[in-house]
Length: 198
Image (cartoon, rainbow, N blue to C red):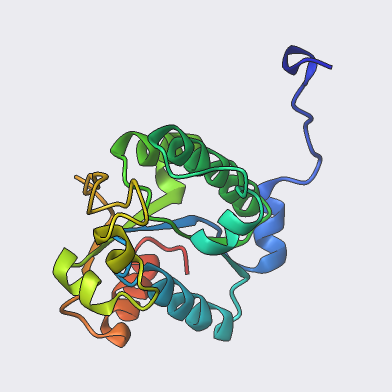
């Protein structure tokens, strides 16, 4: 069967029906920033808060997805684009299931994040820029990735020999090199309440 023969199937149960079942709205919280900027730490802390307050959640973590869904991809620009395309599609599916979806990917290219926003739709896409100075990210470097990249052992590493294009108009900018984790979580939760997701 060719792609042209694939037809989208309508479902009798809508996203709104699923949100009623979960008793809350769904959205995609898209955490972006350098490696070591605190994306995963913040996303999991936000998820824990939401879970403790009865919100159905799921985190799509960069490392976990790279080991599974995107295990066949490298880190060339083309592979990074495909990685984010796949994640965007999966995030949309989970959101359509009525689940608050959190993604933690460097997603260095503006065009890829815009494509994700357009796919998921403006009102349901919350871009959260974990803004952190590169030298602070390198100091954290719990995985030793920057050291390997500086030594030439990891090619196409974002911030070293591959670019990161900061978001121009994200819903939230969180300076994770200046805010505590608790302060950062509070900023996210306050935004979700303000926009009536919670």
